[in-house]
Each structure stands twice: as structure tokens, then as C-alpha cells.
Length: 233
Image (tube, rainbow, N blue to C red):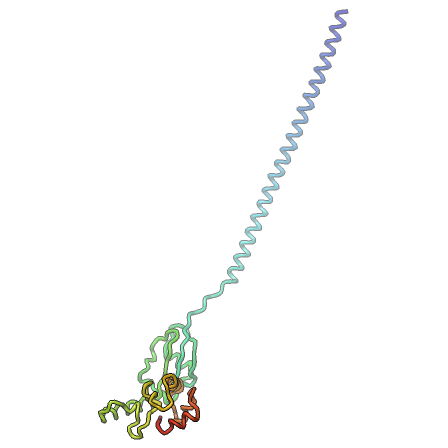
């Protein structure tokens, strides 16, 4: 009887052992499979990340390449330096011109159509290099002759007032040669109008007749009537 009980206990222990072994084996197999799945997922993620990185690098290279093309196409060559100058007096087309830097006065004269027949270039250095905002005035040769004649008359007479200001023969003021103070001696002419007279004669190569003074701003017919017997050109 005792032997039968011992045998029964051994069977129970054996069954329990088998159950334990079964659970342990199942847990071990499940763990192996889980590790394999995790490892597969991990490797898959690595490959996906590498592919994404390669695609990102390719996209960046493409963008940089396109950017380089745009930058090159957007580059605009620098404009060559220029100077803006004005020429007045005895040239065919007196006005403001823009010339390449390094141009000389002779280039400006050519640009303005050349000199007139009355141009005086004795005191003009046509080889001088122009600077930005230069003003070049080509005098009328007749004006120079009048000034020289006036200076000669002044020296001969020994007077303090030269013929450039007052004509010794007619006692009139020469509007082509008188300076600012001399012009202000004319009836009805103040400092501002005197300066306008000087500006006009420099821009137009002098007055051809006394009537031309009416072309100056602020000088109308009434003012001219007051001064016409006291001026000459």
C-alpha cells in the first residue's frame, strides 16, 4: 500500500516537472521569436534610415546645384564707372553728357558735336581728364578779343575802370564783358539778375545783340527800355 502511494506521488511530481519544463520551454521559444522580430525590425529601421539619409543627401546636392545655377545667372556684370559733366558755350550741342571714366575734354567736345566757328580754345587744355560734375565753358573768341581790347584801352587811358566794364567810346556797359559789380551799375539790375546775365552769356556764348538780354529771366520790355541806351555788346 505504501509502495502504491509512493508511486502515485512520483507520478504527480513527474507531471508537475513536465508542466514546469513545458512552460520554461514555451517561454524560451517565445523569447527567441520576440528577439528575432525585434532584431528584424531594428535592421529594417536601419536600412530605412540609411535610404532616407541618402535621399536627403541627393536632394541637398540637387538644391545646391540649382542654387549655384541661379546665383550664376543672377550675377550682373558691374557697370563701368562713368562721369557726368556739362559743357557750355561755343559747341554745337551744349548740355549735360555722361562719358566713361578717364575721358578727356576733347572727348566731351566731340560728344557735343564739335566746336563752333567762334570757339576760343586758347585757354582750354583738351587733354585734361574729366572729373564727375565738371563744367566746361568754351568762350566766344569775340568776347576774348573785346576783353583784350578793353584792357588795352584801360591801360592807355590810365583809368581805374577797364573797357571790359565800360565802353570808353559810348560810355555804355558791355554786357558781354562786364563782371558782376559792373552789371549791377545798369539801371534795374540787382545782384541776382546780374548773375543770371553772366550765366546766360556763358551758356550761349555771349550776347549777339543787346536785345538778347531780354532772354534773361526777370528782364522784360520795360526793363530793357530803361537800359538799352546804357548797354552794348
